Length: 80
Image 1: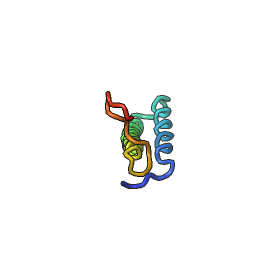
Image 2 (image 1 turned 180 degrees about the vertical axis):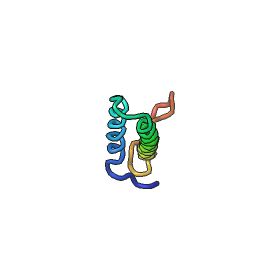
Image 3 (image 1 turned 90 degrees about the horizontal axis):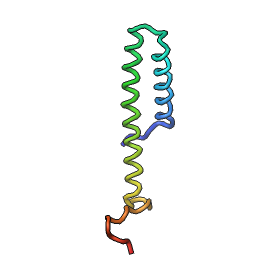
C-alpha cells in the first residue's frame, strides 16, 4: 500500500470546498463550471479512496498483528 502524503486528504477537502463555493457563486461560465465539476468529482473519488484506506488501516490494527485492540467476541459468547 502506498503511503499517504501528509495532509493529502485535508488539501483535497479544502479544494473541494473552494470548487463548491465557485460553482455556487454563479459567477463562472458553463465551460469553467464543467471543468470544476469534473475536478470536484475526481477529488471526491480520491477522498473516498483515502477514507477507505484509513478505515482498512484502523480495521487492520484491530486484527491483533501489532498489539492493537483484539476483535470483539462473537455475539452471544462471553470472553471469560
